[in-house]
Length: 408
Image 1: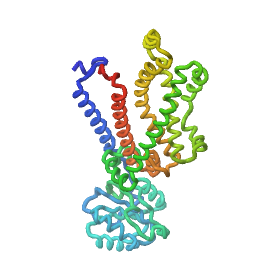
Image 2: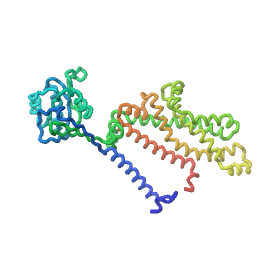
Image 3: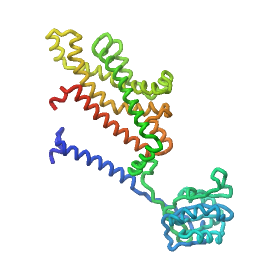
Image 4: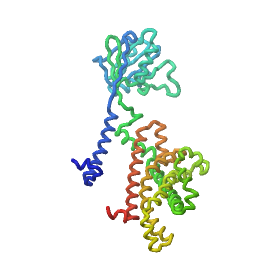
């Protein structure tokens, strides 16, 4: 047991792998539990506000209840047919709040749709509107008035205009609503199951494959441009005092520029096309990579330079034999670490012109449409791409700089 808590100790590979899997499963379990914690809230209506005048139920505690506030002077059976049909198919209960007392119409509708249970309540007194609003706010039901039907909804009424009341209790002429809701709504934290299900729609309707490949290619192009600029420029500044004096302070100052604040400049300079996005992404990487190159040169152990100097090596030989292999082998680790930062900026770049596509644009569009399950699904894809990129960088590092891994 002590090996698990030894300072800077190392575990066997198999044990470490098992712990990684256990950690992932633990996080998944916590996520699942958080989205399944339920909370309850109640709404009590006094018996004087409502008068129960028809009840076709076997018990007073009603489950799977739909609520409809039907504030019309008469009950139109043809209008209510769609609601009764849908609820009858689900063997649910309809709590119908109305300002009329047309018992015959409600009785007829109930008998026509076999299996439906109806509790109809007539609003009493001057508090009619207030009572309607309380039920409306609690259950999400719609108030159907005489001017409700318009050309926009083609005169159709369905359960989409009703509200889910959860559970209703009837006692002494009064009504108690009880709703059980998740602690975190799906608009805040979707369940893992909902996230997995969203991949089907992302693939079939949102062209996920295209957006993913577009973002990966954009990321690689931005990286390539950044490396081709930052590494040679970093060597110039780090190796030669003339260039260090000219540019070192300016390079340090770049790190304090908030990149999201200069998006307007990149749009003005490069337009709204893919070129602008590559330039913006490359700049975001250069800002961090360039000072790192200079720092790595300063950190080089002087014993290597003294050895080559003793052997009579020229400056170019020192650069070729010492600085290039030593610095590039260290920079490869820094480039690998910057993968995470590059995906941060690629999201910003793709949001500047979402019509071009990309994962960033897809995240932005999904969030604007309140499809939070899709946002989580896309973020998981970005994480997986990041892991794959990191693995590929490690393999490339082993191939280009095998001497780094000899002691390992």
